[in-house]
Amino acid sequence: MKKIFWVLIVVLLLLQGCSSEKPIEPAVEAPVEENVEPMTLKVGSIKGPSGVGMVKIMEDNPVLGESVTSEYEIVGSPDILVSKVLKDETDIAVLPTNVASMLYNKGVDYQLIGINTWGVLYLVENGETVSSWDDIKGKTVTLFSKGSSPDVVFRYLMAENGLTEEDVTIEYMASHIELSQMMIAGKKTIGLLPEPMVTMVQMKNPDLGVAMNLQESWEEAAGMEFPQGCLVARKGLIEERPEVVEAFLNYYDESCDWVNKNLEEAGVLVEKYEIGMTSPMAQKAIPKSNIRLGKSYDVKETVEKYLGILYEFSPQEIGGKVPDEGFYYIKK
Image 1 (cartoon, one colour):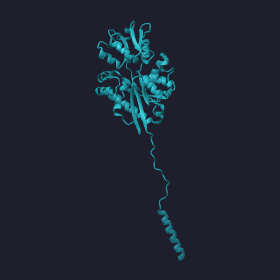
Image 2 (cartoon, helix red, strand yellow):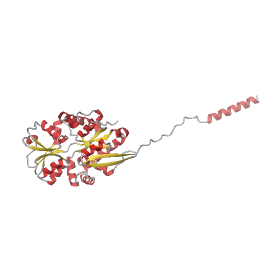
Image 3 (cartoon, helix red, strand yellow):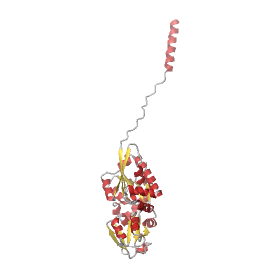
Image 4 (spheres, helix red, strand yellow):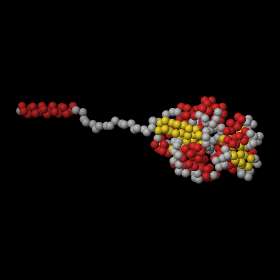
């Protein structure tokens, strides 16, 4: 009996010891932060209104993501920026919307991420009485860069207002800079110019006046806004770092808003970053430059309609066809 008693005691003690131990749980590895590859975001823009919307970002140089630094460059013409896009030397670029379409249709791996300029075209007169499309009938109008989107838009609006090229004599000059000089000198009396050249010629020759606002004419004819300038981004960037693209768009939106509300300070930055205007000129040009960001997924229908109109009128100006859905960056 004593032997059985002691066996029972030992068993009870063993059972008590087992019950006091905590159950074994499977080991859980602590989350390891993914190493983000450092990158330098290269952003390119063109002198003029296209670059103005970006000045506050250039000044503040905000952090756009983990391990991301940014470089901003302003170049003299779209051709220079197109060359950088073709060589993958820029991650985000500001381009005319029709040029972005042409590049996409040629297989260049960039997508439209936003519209940043909603039209900067004005018909300027010197000594002519012009306030409507009927008033240019029988007159000579000088345009710049034959075949460019301003040329196509002007001729489209002529047609929409019942005018043919037999009704109006159209002359061309190589660039808006050359045309501006001729307008200032009084050697051309009606010319199509973009901002900030409109402001510049009026500051140098007060006799020059704005005859027509082509943005208003476009809205009347097409029933939509005029998405003239855009932002494109390298598709690899969009796929690998979409949060950086979104951060850039958000800051760009804030920058455009700040520029429009702070003309004097914005003018100082425009001159500081050599965007093609003096501070006084920028202050006068900004309100007429229609600088505002529309993100691609918010303005897609407007851009499609715009490119569709250009296609119907001059297919080669958008690369021979209206871009498919892959042209547009859509937020996931």
